[in-house]
Length: 93
Image 1 (spheres, rainbow, N blue to C red):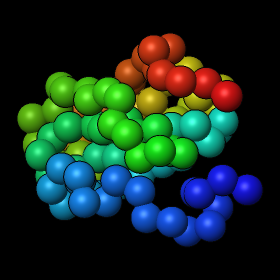
Image 2 (image 1 turned 135 degrees about the horizontal axis):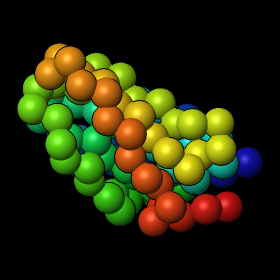
Image 3 (image 1 turned 180 degrees about the vertical axis):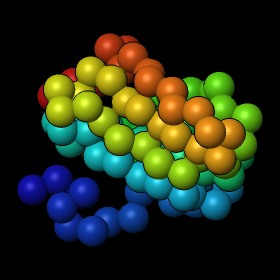
Image 4 (image 1 turned 90 degrees about the vertical axis):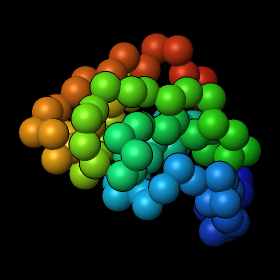
């Protein structure tokens, strides 16, 4: 089992403000987080590196969720918007 199964802390010190939502991709390769700074961060789950940032919300993000295929990520926030992001540029397993 990899680090994410052992409960190792990865990337927490590099967080981008209060994190309000997290989601793990179906493949387990990517962790998405939404926060008060209005960004969605996409972390490489095994290493904790932050490969991508998605911007577009104008208020706190309250929810992030991957599609069952992992090819899209939806985020919702206090700006009353739901945004759907393409994840084809993310690492796959």
